[in-house]
Image (cartoon, rainbow over the protein chains, first blue to last red):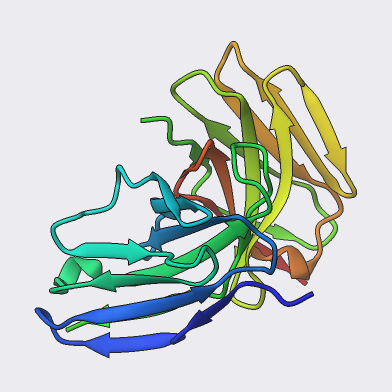
Length: 115
Length: 105
């Protein structure tokens, strides 16, 4: 079974530029999550989708971050404009149903460096 | 915040020894989960323990949960070099900052 796919794996941009990350969850998984992991810290949930609807985006900095999951499958996370403090690994995860007891499967992440 | 916080921040042991990591959290929970993260396999779910459970085993892993103290522990027995990784506890979708385990061959 294929895992969660993410691209690109690495991205370097300058501050104030825009960047987008793509995630393809495990086939059949209804719930998709985006996390931000700053070096030396644990992952921080940014947004959770159930199919193509947002369940929780309370920790998403909406002035610069946006995410969508138009057809309930793939998802993109965008940062516009980027700041130095956005340098982090962005992890996408999916789970079959969602909810607090469903195991999340994580992708390899996209490492973003903002100069 | 519901974040779990792990202790110690770093742990270095010899292969074959046991490793114990602790997690404390702040609010009531439905369950607590432990994850492992290394460069080779990314972030992987290890075990989930529900609030009405006190202990759970999975292979060489043993997790305990004390809801009265709002704490959990992860024990890895007979550690291997391949166990070298960062270990995180998570309550709901909130992760702590992790324990970095180094198992020396």
